[in-house]
Amino acid sequence: MSHSPSASTATPDAAAASSRRWWTLSVVALAQLMVVLDSTVVNIALPAAQADLGFSNADRQWVVTAYSLAFGSLLLLGGRLSDLMGRKRTFIIGLIGFAVASALGGAADSFGTLVAARALQGAFGALLAPTALAVLTTTFTIPKERARAFGVFGAIAGAGGAVGLLLGGVLTENFNWRWNLYINVFIAVFAIIGALIFVTTAPRTGPRPKLDIPGTILVSGGLFSLVYGFSNAETDGWGSASSWGFLVASGVLLVAFVLWQRRASHPLLPLAVVMDRNRGASYLAVLIAGAGMFGIFLFVTYYLEVSLHYTPIQTGTAFLPMIAMLVLSAQLSTNIFVPRFGPKLMVPIGMVIGVVGMLYLTTLDANSTYVANILPPLLIIGLAMGSIMPAAMQTATLGVNRQFAGVASATVNTSQQVGGSIGTALLNTLAATAATTYVASHLPASPDVVAAAQIASYNTAYMWSAAFFALGAIVAALLYTRRSTVAATATAAHAEAQAEDVDDAPLVAMH
Image (cartoon, rainbow, N blue to C red):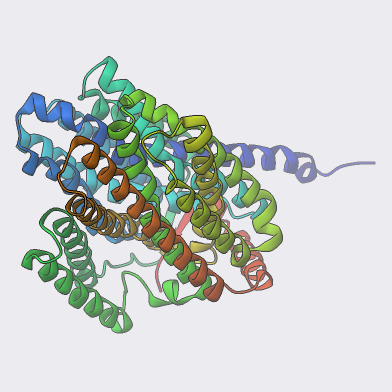
């Protein structure tokens, strides 16, 4: 039987396209890992950097805050720029900028230079993170492949913080604090080479889209005020005028942004993107899970290093089983359970498992051992995050018009960043109050009382983190639609992608 030429070449062409997609995933995963681990790898280096550069404890917070302010306030702008400039170009610019900022920070000879470099890192991270997710969204349109890809991406998003703890400990103990920043240069080089080879794009057709300048100013100012307000609350207390002043300003600016988006001819974030029930539920799930996760990385790290006297490397190693469980759970969730049961079932179940893990952590005390007492709750929490993050992140960008894939992806990152800011401020305040109350009720304040107060403060943070996850379970169960609705959306999105040939990732102009 004879075969036509087109038939004989179809399979190799399809195989080549599929292979390119998976190489693209590797490149995107490298970029995502670099951005996520940077938030914790630098924290490990802070004491050594402080001793080297001679800045005060009061100034120390700005090494972290400078990054989070730039990153959180510019995320939506960064996502929209990837829609307007082209994914590949924006992705490579973000990688180069992040690498240069990291090198500048590693070579810093003063506190001011280090803070400036961290702010620059945050700005380019705001360009890179949503673009990476947008590249993934527009590259993987076949539902089965999309599930696998988001399983990997979600696992990295959830586990990158713990990887940063381990990497930061190794680099700080065996080299010096500057290598916690220099390491990004090496990761970026590999990612840039991969992006040049594997990330594809095509020329834009039609008129050039316009950037929503008023919307950009309103939302960037609103997000800056929100992150800054929560950062002030963490350091100055909730009663400070600067905390509430910025939080109120944030509310006013964000409301004004929503009102403007309703009438803007070229909206930065079309309200239809976030008003879809499944996407809205996903954004809230990522926000709540992000807030709850800080109860793990922040306070378990304090517990291991301060109460049990672990070294930084031992602390990072202690999180490795949780990472392994998270990766395994993410793959099972996205490849088996989400296609079968949908996010309406999987995300609430993951949140409930998170509640169990957090409550388990409240049983830890000064005599707890790793294998018997610490490992089980970490494994449970890894299972929870592997169930929540990939399903939520996949659904958050499902069915979005390709011309808004970047800003929709940025909304995912914004949710995670805002959740982390809220979680850090609230949990630190609640934990500090619990420690003070414990010492006041157990006077005189001996070293044993202070140690017990620390553990009491951790337990308070775990309890509130459990409450965050419980709230997330209720919200997800109420907002997510049935699996059949999600499946229909996925099928329609795939059909649209095939019609537009999105595997080559051309940019479609706004109408």
